[in-house]
Image 1 (cartoon, helix red, strand yellow):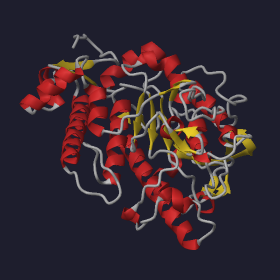
Image 2: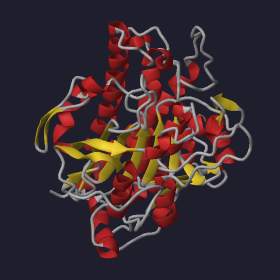
Image 3: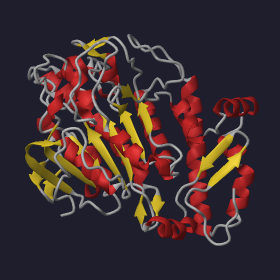
Image 4: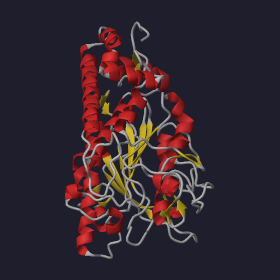
Length: 444
């Protein structure tokens, strides 16, 4: 760690054997960060995808503009209502068939962050478009150690036919570096954690930790002790809280890796938590740490692959998600899907809790973020791709007026919102997929 006489640079690392550890935003960094870019904290962006649409009558809030109330499905977000925006009227046109026939679930994932047409193929000639996270990473990714991170819950493959003639690559990925190159997501929490905090020789560092059963915190302890001497009491407390959260996450990951159990009709890959809620929350915590340490400012997260038929017994749903989504207005199936929708919204709320608990000057990490949660299918029973279920949490450092239900004309491109998000994050994007310009009125 390089010694500074007055302030710390934002990109300060703690270093030790086989490890390099970023730090959260400290008060000692704020003057340096302000001088560099005119602000006290960067804007982070995350894009969280859920499959199979939603029961839209239970999803849509009542009211309009600032006079609105949360719906049944979104009730778990009540603690953060003043920091979220819910949208109506946004569309992914290229999720529709457009003459290509069946395959709406593959098109849902493939078009979600690209707003581009999928070439219908089960072969190697896959083609869709660059996704918003990767478009932003190309513009601002060099400002952080990792340009972006891609996380998921279910493994997938990039070959073969997974949906009516569409390649499995479309169903298993929402992040695309180029039109023909998907970004592989990490579903193993331990490997995702080590990607964030491992050294250049990650394999050697992992071997050292396993040999001596050391935490990454143990490896950087000497550098951390030197740093603490240079910090005020407030920053010392903040550093201690951060170290505690890292230690707790390491312990959760280690426990999850050893708790393998038989799950009927479902293959549990090695190192993956058997409890879905634990798995989702671990990945959200990893995203929180990635943003808190400014290791990256861009992330995507797939809660499941497109068309996932996972069951949700923790909320009393034994049937497969995809099968139930074709409910034909059967009351029990509608209730089951609503319970799944609400469960996933509750896990998203937990993520917002974590972001809101991290202070960054006068704001929180949640305030300084733009966290999109949604899908490119609305009603899976009818395979609709308009009036999508979209929530945006955070204000991008005060650039968006939150606590709003914002309604836009039918068929407004979802990609217009993506263009706006990118510009607020410092990625000067002019166009993405089928966008027609930035989404207007977000600051009122």
